[in-house]
Length: 253
Figure 1 (cartoon, one colour):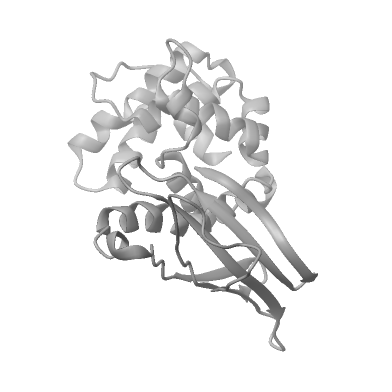
Figure 2 (figure 1 turned 135 degrees about the horizontal axis):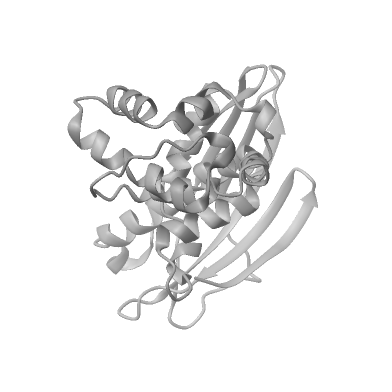
């Protein structure tokens, strides 16, 4: 929804003034933002990025456009050898008399802007190879697998949104790409797991080395019925692994 985006002034690598004009729903005027962005590294190794509203004679008022404000702060703190914590605070002001009553607009943009932190996590998570992944990466990947993506709104004929999501993740994620190269059926298997559609689960005694895409779909689709039949997710996964020999092999590998 950006109509215009530009760096108006670049004082140095740590300090710039940026301009953004955004398209809004037709019932209200568009909004533009003029902000000063600064960042620094602190003595403890953390980083701070601060955005504050500013004014400039070169960026006066435009017809049918209201000047809004979007102050924000982000702290980037290392909390372990391979872990970083992001703290992100935003306080949008949509400007004008109408802006004071646009709670729905605030909710819309607050959600999408706070999701920026997730985008950062997704970017760095995708760079990790299979040998680098640990249990926390498994949790992060699980969250990515059940989170909607922009790409799935433009799926091809006959392709479900979940299938698009999985396809894009396997394309962009180094670790998942390695899994797909080792086991070509893994992408379709995971798509059935994430779809989580309840259906009668068929039995399969196939071994991991003989797994086909057809068998993988059967086994992946059976997890939903295990979840329905158990009180906890852990119990459901244990039952699922015990039911299918290939899953026991997969867990050990």
